[in-house]
Image 1: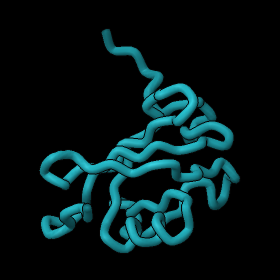
Image 2: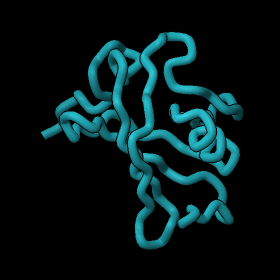
Image 3: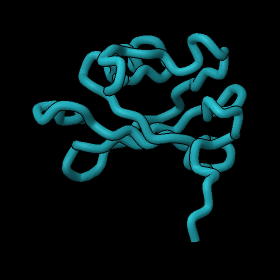
Image 4: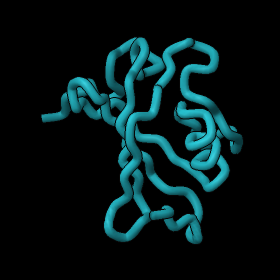
Length: 101
């Protein structure tokens, strides 16, 4: 089943295989999705830089793809990964560490 990229970027929710922790949220276009399938590591589209980026390319904190699911509308991706190192650029394990309530 192929995701529906006709409306542009799709949110990609990244979870860790071992813990089921939500690690991060990023966006994919069709090109980054294809590169993810080809390489087995996560590729995303940076909205601020308007270019593709490979998670961990500079830090070494890679994400090895274990599975990719799509929701019922095919417009959101849920990607399970083996996380190598922290997922967050701040050094935290997950990008979701700021408690609001």
